[in-house]
Image (cartoon, rainbow over all chains, first blue to last red; front, side, top):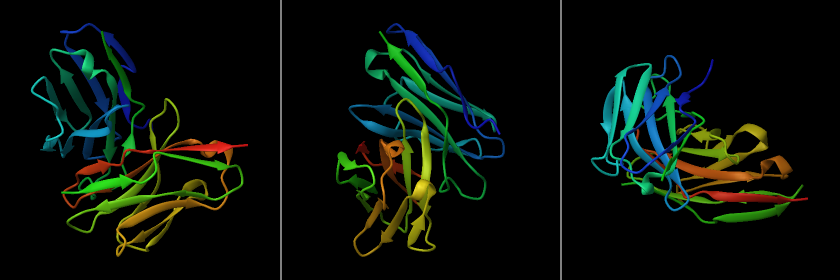
Length: 116
Length: 112
């Protein structure tokens, strides 16, 4: 199994540009999570999906952030417009069926975003 | 509401000595509890998990943790530290609804 796949691994962009981060969960997993990690704030849960439906997006910082999961094998996190304070490592994680999101989460390698 | 407090932001031990990383949690319901490890510039890897079965949980690489409901604690231990254990460790609580909350992390340094 390839594990959770995230792309790109690194992204450098200028303030005001749109950024799209992509995630492919482990095949068969039905819960997907987006996290942001910074030195100042640690690891924060942004949003999670169960069976492609957003369950809790209370961690999404503001309207500039949006996430979608059009099917069981793909999710995107979009930031529009991006700001320097969005610079962070963004992790995607997935967990298996029958756990309702309470089981072990398998993390992707992360996308390191730098907004200049 | 739920929360996780990792009581030490940094722990330093000598190789071959015991490791103790402390975690306290609060949760309205019976939570699922996890410890994850993150090596520099890497993703997170599960060490162990507690999901209301045995209170003493054994994980990978010789780590174990004990769930103590009366103390709302889930401390991580290892009898003998190895250099490769140097990393950041996160205690995580997941609610019945599936919402995860991470602690701030504890950086473990292992001295030769």
